[in-house]
Length: 174
Image 1 (cartoon, rainbow, N blue to C red):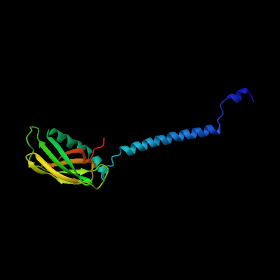
Image 2 (image 1 turned 180 degrees about the vertical axis):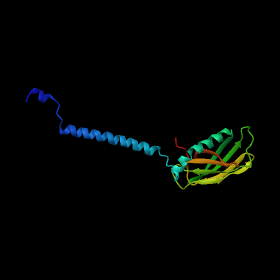
Image 3 (image 1 turned 45 degrees about the vertical axis):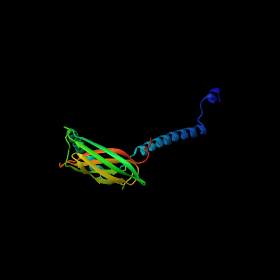
Image 4 (image 1 turned 90 degrees about the vertical axis):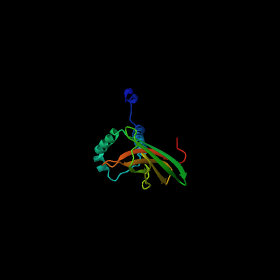
């Protein structure tokens, strides 16, 4: 054997083991990061008709543009009061047209639902307390994050929608 043969690199069992450990370590690390990102960003919202809702998406965009073109000013003010494990919420809606005139004579509902829990939806009907002012009271079964959807029946084919995320009762996390 010459000196050149003993000074060259030799692949040993330890090298092969290190390569396997490094390779699979990278694979597991990437899988772990991807799993964490997937689980931490999933809102939990499910829909039984995802295909049909996807097909109707362009119609929803057109309805939203038509609603925006009306120039209406609809504001939602909610006040929460702790009630047992849940909260009681009082919703005040003020609806004005583009000329700041009251939008009176509508009926409507406010729906509360949890982004990550099924079966706790709460729907409350709105009562017109003054021209363009509507009020509703709902009892939510739990405190925390809720999605709130206002739906005003304006007498046309398309109701007026407005959605908002709210925090119900207790101390809000920072």
